[in-house]
Amino acid sequence: MASIFRRLLSIRKPKKVLTRKDSITGRNHTFEVPYLSRLDGNQLQTGQSLIARGYITGSEGFIVNLTSGPSVELDDNETGQLDDRLLALRVDLSKGKVFLNACINGQWGKEAFVKQSYKEGDEFDIRIRCFEQHFEIYVEHKLIANFKHYVPMSNISHIYVTGDVRLYAVSWEGKLYNMPYTADIPGNFYVGRKLFVSAIADKKPKDLSIDFFAGEDVPFRLNASFIQKKIQRSSEISGTKSTPETTFEGKNKFPLKAKRSFDILIYASDDKFLVSNLSILRAKLKLLFQVFINDVLYCTFDHRMPAAKIERLQINGDIQLIGVHIK
Image (cartoon, rainbow, N blue to C red; front, side, top):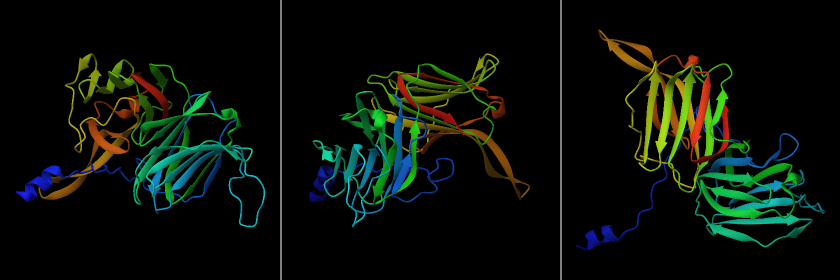
């Protein structure tokens, strides 16, 4: 009886879903810190987002700073003043907190913090979205703070990351997009190409759709219903709609959440699989779309026509689009 009560009263933390580590998601290699990079272009634009992903290698924590120049650390024997840190984000593993502050002309502001538990070996996803008056800061896809600028964001010129981490990627994404978003695909969406979509779901979202067009045909349509908690895949060729597919990989039926950031990666693949013919094994190609949500494989969808015919893309729904690009 005692063992039954122990099982009933025990609190189990949900297991973190393992991301895919291969060349499709880009998590098959990492790079070391300190990482210091100058921003491309003249200055930040409203709506742009910094996205930093990696994993934690020790217990000391790490920092992500947006600075006004390349002077970010002083050697032991150096004296002087560092460039301004317009945003200093510090993750403290021992305290289970993310600290936020700014340092302008050598003077620190008032430090704030948000609780966030990390441990050695955890992956992290930190996003900083820029607006005229403030930053929106997302940790693990959740908005944790609006941080007001001490000085204009146009002063930011560098991004600096250091601490007990290795990085998968650091990137600046997007702008303010109008919805629906429609774009031609230069060279078409042939096998081997990838579509990356980063967005934030609205407060009360209803749906999200991503459509690939080949002329008037829709070889692949992804439709997510936040109300039904369902993600459907279908096609529409020569006016005939296919039966929607709703199967999914893993245990998370609907990984999208209101007010959370998310990434969708769609890969036009040619997965090889083995077939048996009179006791002889030979390789065949299975042409399909692989759909990843937050770098976790969610589902696949067989090609209904050659992917190379896909020439146009449309994204619509109750989201704020952060970034979209094709490789």
